[in-house]
Image 1: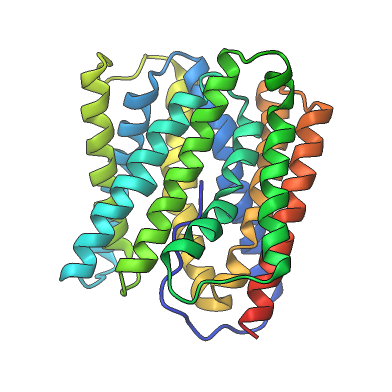
Image 2: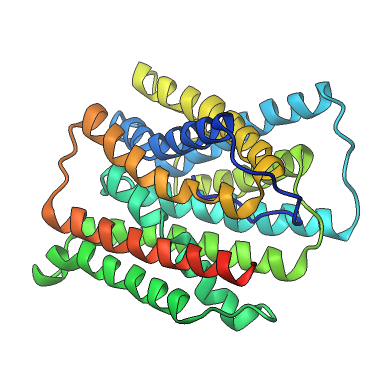
Length: 309
């Protein structure tokens, strides 16, 4: 999972052991989602239908939690924009590209590629958002991130391209789509997301993916295979519902800057779970690209923290 745009700034407190534990848990839940998606796809699930059904179930479960906990229903222009932009880009566009791309991309590599979302978001924000600038550290961080992508793709580029290269580009498109949606929300929306807007985003994005599935001839059903349903259960309960609950809890406890450190944990969890679940090997190019991207993320994060004092 890619972290959604942060809501309005909150008063953050210092790290506690429980916060660090929640951060590691969140990184594990979200990072593991990438190999779990591929696990279900390899078992026969159609990508667009798989994604649509996941978000539909997540919407029902998240909406039930919002109703039981009596979360006030949002209203107004900001809420509508959150649903349309979040559901269209962060759920529908992200899910469509990611699930299609993961048919030919290892889950661990997908986690690393999606980890470039903050880099793409920072670059887009520079041109779209007022007062969004970065120092030489941020500039170097973004440059390193894209160098890391080149390193990851180097075997395919040298070999003249392949089916897996196209699939990997689709995963990158999922990261770019997420970055576009995040920047647009920061530019146009001035209210934070809550459980109801997340529910509506899941439903809106799921509906878009369902229409795409039908247009390309994918029935809105899943094969009667245990692996597919186990994958779906994990993605709905652990990654979507529990993951977002932990994310927003951390936001209110330690603030967005510290919470988004989860970006470093996701790829590590994805690589580890991919190795165990699908016996995915990590080659030298993948390892080198990951290290370079991680260095870029670190510099970008340090730049943001310094500018915010």
